[in-house]
Image (cartoon, rainbow, N blue to C red; front, side, top):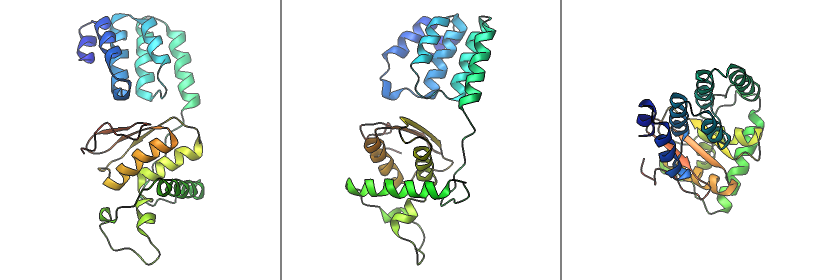
Length: 217
């Protein structure tokens, strides 16, 4: 609906609807739509205000804001925004299940083990039903599940920034039930928003230990 308002030049209505949304339901696409609405209605100050509230400014969000500034001929400000993005955003790594090719692999697995211990302390029990093959001699249920790509990606984020407040991950497969449960708990323990886009949907794990999908995935 926000996007529809924007496409019809009804930027004010788009912003009003955006402001009515619960914060925990706002995703990257929501920000893109409302900034695009500002762009098409010349609402530069409103766009700047919205941008300032976004904790994790993704490439799509930056691109939409650059378009907004450019449409109003604010090319110097648009270029500064591009330069800022390029300076602070390096390419995100790709993680495979049980991947050990990353230069910080030892640190990532150490952090993954630390997270695993925290999960166990908070009562988590690893669910072996999500393992579809026989365990090898040197494997445990925990070691197999903790090696899933999204868990390594989460661990890497904490290695890079131990105090990170938001993590975004894209996964090409459906998230498994154990990973879904542990990610909810990690978000709660570490007080960090975690957004995972899997093959089926977008999961927004909040600091209260809940997921936007309400466990329906």
